[in-house]
Length: 335
Figure 1: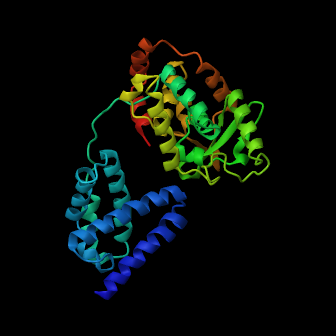
Figure 2: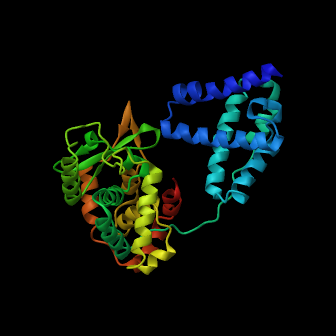
Figure 3: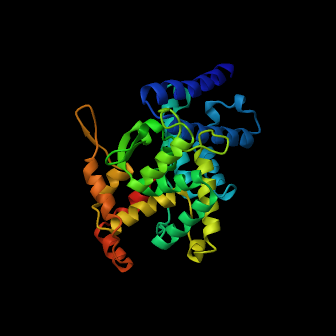
């Protein structure tokens, strides 16, 4: 029994340090998502078996146990089907790796690998109108310079919240034309243009903080001048949304989050007639791989698309645009 325990613990360590980090070269944020999924599962397994985590061995890790864990995420913790499926994907990767080190229990791991993703209900994405965004900006201007800058960068770039939180002074190009480098999933970097007004606000803010020449300094920080986390950014945006509801009651029906702003940027571009492939590149959903690197769409094309985004088409044309680009909902819903 001791041998099995030691092998399981060693396998967990090797999975993170050797397989995910060295062999697959995943980013720290991606590795953290695997860590959270495995940690949650092992805690559940320990509670379910009424044994400490260190006493769990491969013979106890069954497909039935994984299914009970996934169901508990929805029923007991009220997590979404999307989160459930993400946890399952992480666990499948772990058990696939575990099958190469623990042949005695490989049957268990193979059966876990056969668990299907749960079908998600098709829901229309949330995005904000011009009036709703204007209400958010009014509240951010009243709140603080940092909150206003956070909202501006999220909306202007359409970046993921972690990408904006990770943004360094050295990632900002004041131009002309001004732009920022965002590092997304898989450590892939893309260059995204920003409005001249955004660049003006950003430059003044960095000078005020006396970090305009500190290339490694974070652009977005919290009240303690430490890098803001994605959870901190989520709190800020949700708070601004609640305050803006007084001026714009329609916000009460929306899920307001940094990812909603990402949807909003994409939808506004789409309504402006910007080609779907350009938007995908802009948001980092598609990267072209040629020879040894990833080729970015021309920055000038992005700048032209940005200018077009200010000339929105009438709202009644949205359905026609979505029908023309039938897959837009699927890729916009991807995290």
